[in-house]
Structures are given as C-alpha cells and as structure tokens.
Image 1 (cartoon, rainbow, N blue to C red):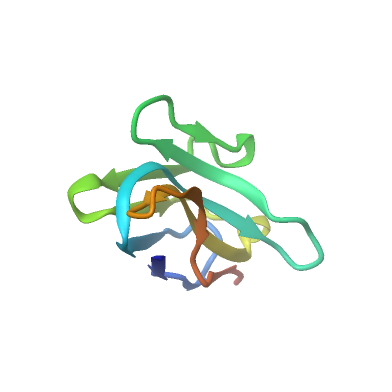
Image 2: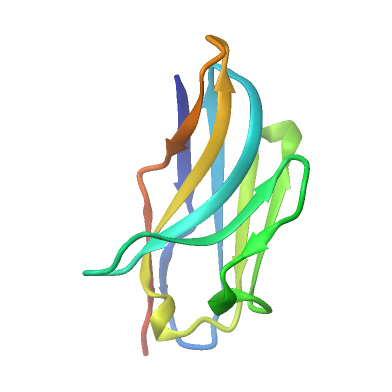
Length: 120
C-alpha cells in the first residue's frame, strides 16, 4: 500500500500565501505523477496541478501564475506553493499520486485532504 500525508493548510487572508506539502510512503516501486486536487463545498473535485516524473506539468487555468508545484523525488514529496490567494481558492486540497506498488499494481492514491480557507 501507498500512503500520502499532507500538511500546510490553514486560514489565510486574501492576497496571502500558503505552502502545502505531501509525502508518499509505503510500498512504492515507482511514481508516474504527483499532484494536487481540490474540492470546494457543493462542487466536484478538480485538478489544481500535476507534475509527471517525465513530462509536462499541468495547471488549472484558475491558478496559473499564482500556484507553483514542485517535487523532491528523492523524498517522494510534492509541494504546492500558493501565492496571491483568493476567496475562491477556499477548498479541501487533496494530494494525489499515480504510482506502481511493489505488487506491480498501477493506481491512484489519495491523501486525507487539508483545508485551505481564504478569508478576511
């Protein structure tokens, strides 16, 4: 099994910044992608940013120029630096990885979610 543990959420004023972190651990053979999704109340979960091990990073249009995703592959860790936060960024943010376990099963894994609230 693969476990994801997120940290870094909280309450921030509009225009402020937060940095989310997510560490993947467990029976990881290889990682294809690591990324972040979010779900606001009464809305569907949506992609925020995803970074493949090989390939092009993808951002939601709504966060381009404000959010930056990065990875530390040696630590199986993904970060999301969020700047110029807006009230509409308020959501539960979920870490995701598409990984192959030692059993050679490729699948998506999800963290428990971390709340980000942008409010004055």
